Length: 203
Length: 203
DNA sequence: ACTCGGATTCAACAGGCGTTGAGATCAGGA
DNA sequence: TCCTGATCTCAACGCCTGTTGAATCCGAGT
Image 1 (cartoon, chains in turn orange, green, brown, cyan):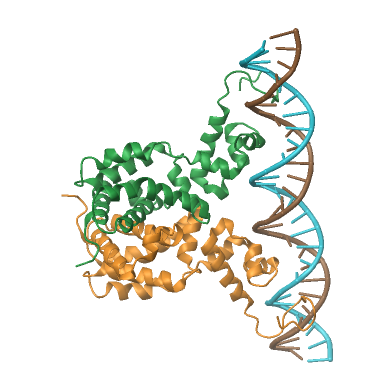
Image 2 (tube, chains in turn orange, yellow, blue, green):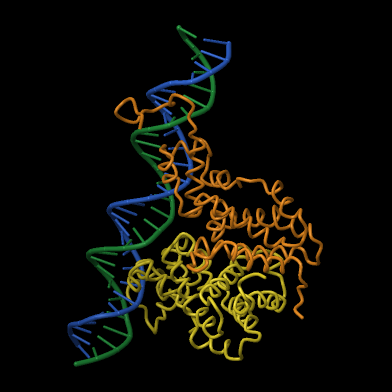
């Protein structure tokens, strides 16, 4: 609100404007909490204090803005070895602890939530989610341990992880949202561990 | 296409028109595959071969149409005792087998998928999903067995069930979609069984 | 035979959407 | 100092949306 005249001015603003980044921040927040379809370019522009057409100028298309905004803030290649490194023992717990920590840390601007919310009824976003969760993370994990049917095991893990996101962050199931994090790490960790290492044919 | 004149006629059609039901069928299908927001009244009317305003005449509002269409085709009170009856042994497997059978049977007009697809970014639908999954099914199951923290156990089960729906039907993870049903019943059944009966504090 | 009322369509509204093109403004290199 | 090009706004376009009101049609009860 340091406007020197009384009304909005056109043209370039003085100083180093971090406008592009603030558009990306607003987009992350809107896409994450409303999904691709419901989040509007106009609302994102409004949040960033900017005209909608400036968004188009920077990113060209709503779809392209979505792709740019849902870029993951950390590189899986950096973090996965850190989780897998200590060995198979406790691997499930480490994965779940990492996931829950990330969710709490990212808050409302969480690309994983944006992808889940958009994947529903939007095949392109479903593909992005599949690629991120599967190829970037779980396939590496499943490959690090040595077991039969690694892809099926990765899919099993993905189903529980997506379920955690849906139930805790989107459906907001009350007991699950209120539960102590380490309790969940224990329960879900054992599930993931089973999906990764135990025999898949029930005895 | 048994039109006696060459063009569409106004007014009441001859014979016993099951129009209301065919609108509901179309709505179930559209809401299930696209979610509340993306499914349009016009498309539903088109599928039913009817003018959009007739949909409003019957149901008043898109929201009311959604509620009517997402009514579950079977009554949980009828089926849950059938699943719980035989006792705690194999309860998880019976639940998962019932769920997967239902999904295959209902196909593209599955209210559970419609609710999941709409819950995302639509709090009213999230509440409907919560009420159906929790109060109608899982709370009864958790109450039937006797264990500590029954609500948390119900939420844990819900998280895996929703995850199965997301991963298999919406994300379409390939190995999961292709997997033999009884294999999944074994793997997921054991998970649900754990969530229902095993101690929640990891040893 | 005659009305009555539900079924059905048509045409339109008001609002929101993504996107576009033209123009204004200014930072920084020549 | 002037010019270039990036940044930014305004106004508008065409489209799609849920919803409405009026007009038509016809089966059924009297």
